[in-house]
Length: 114
Length: 113
Image 1 (cartoon, each protein chain N blue to C red):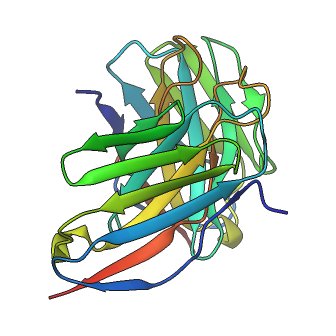
Image 2 (image 1 turned 180 degrees about the horizontal axis):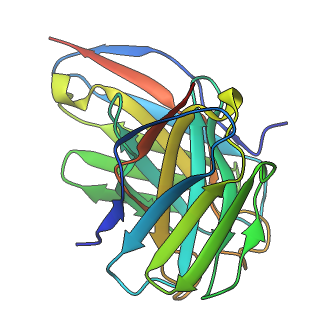
């Protein structure tokens, strides 16, 4: 089974802090994704990566950056946390094989910015 | 027009009934379609994939795809209270080269005991 592990289930940080969310997958997947999910807004793509050191902006990249130094690890960075970044953050991964493949999600990190 | 549309619900069905969840998408070239189940406070879990027109069955779940009508549905037979969750439809975007998926906002299903 695919295992996508996010470093924290719950996280509380203060406004202005630099926040790191870590995600690790164990299936040698090429693609990794970061989403945030808010009530009524569904899943919104922040950034994704299709290879080591490669990244592309999603629909809402402002205020975020990412890092992918190793194939299995994809980090989301909140450069200067703000209260409107309080949300559920979901990491996902997928393989590139014969067209689009499903994404597999981690358990999520519920982040609160005070 | 949203790229992937789902009725937000809640869809309420009695235990043992068939639940029918629907999804329409705007991009005619989409090739891959997925259904995810998400329990409250949890992350989405893949339950069905479908790539060609017709029906695909897996246990109590049947996915139906009609590319001409740009419509994909999920049927849950013998619905159980444990099926109560939000069901997300996901579709490949135009071109499909980026490995992204476009998600609907989900339909909340409530199965009444």
